[in-house]
Image (cartoon, rainbow, N blue to C red; front, side):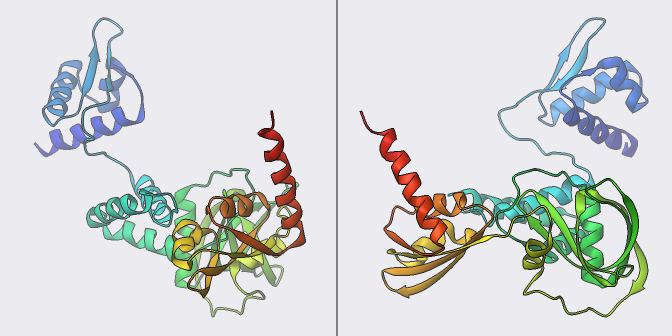
Length: 320
C-alpha cells in the first residue's frame, strides 16, 4: 500500500511538470504497466485531481484545470523558492497581495520539514533588499542561494568558482557576510581571502559553492550596510539617485501605499518626508505620482527636471 501511495504521489508530481504525457512514456517513468497507470490515474481522480485522458495509440494524460485548487506536490528547492517568494510578496504595496501572501506562508510553514524551514529562514535573514536596480533578469538556483545564506548565518567560509564579466574563471575562498537582492539580481558580499579585500559577487556567475568547514570571526564591513556596498562597488550598476520629497498627506497613508519603496518620516499630522534611492528616477516619479497627493521635491535637481519633462509630455498627450 505504501508503494502504491508513493507511486501515486510520483505520478501527480510528473503530471504537474508537463502539459501532456504520452501514456507509454508516463508508465515507463513510473516503472509500471499501462494498466497499472490507468488505476493510479483513477485514484487521483477520486482525490479530486482533474486528470484528462486521450485515448488511442498515441493517447496520454494531462492535468486539467479544475473547479478548485487541489494540493500540489513540490520538491525541496521549489518549496524554498515558494516560501521566499511569499516573504517578498508579504511586503508588497499592492492591495490584497500582502494579506493573502501571509495566509499562504503560514500554511506552507506549518507543513514544511525542519530542514527546509532552516534554509528558508537563513535565506530571509541573510538577504538585504536594495530597492531598484538593473532590469536585466539573472536566474539563480535556489539551492545555491540557501547554501550561501546558511554560510552567512553560520559564519563559515565558502569555496566556489567565479566567472568574471570578461569570461575569466577563478576559484575563490571567502568569508561570506550577506546576500543582497538588487532588483532581479543577487549578490554575495564577502571578504575575499585570496585578494585580502571585500568583494561583491554576482550569484548567477558563481558555481558549485560548498562550505569549507572553517568558522571565522566577522570583520567590519567598510560601508553602512551590504546593499550600499554593492551599489558603490559593482561595476555594472550606476550610482543611485537619492530622492527626498515633502508629501502633503498623512505619513500612515503614504507608508501604506509606497512604504516598501522608501522611508517615510512624519513631519506633522498632514505632511511627511519621503526618502527613496534608485538607479533611475522613473520609479520614484511613478511612486510619488501614484499617491494622489500634492508633493514638493527637495532633492535632487535632476528629479525636478524629470517632473517638468513628464508634465510637458502628459500635457501634449491630452491636447486636441
